Length: 110
Image (cartoon, rainbow, N blue to C red):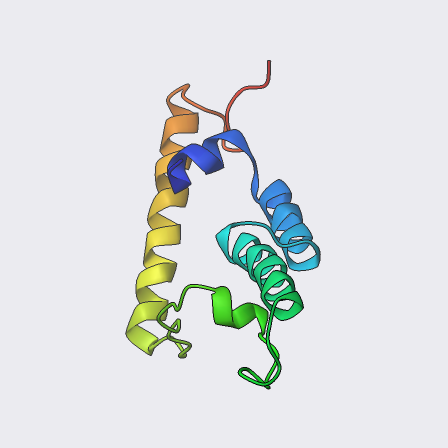
């Protein structure tokens, strides 16, 4: 689903609620990898020969290695571009509402 499709189906309040829920109860492939890694590490540790492998296995030993996500601050230019894009979308929604298109609050309810 694209961002446009998502926003056509739910409003920003509902999206914010889902984002808050995700912080409390995350889901997705990363969580699935942790679950699989925990199960694999338990099985490996139960069958581990402490003489050959003194250190217990960890869930991360069985998880795929992913490139770290770059965590950086936005530049001033990136912030201005984001503001401009939001403004342009708002103007387009206002024009569509004036021409009898979708109401500015989103798609019509059934």
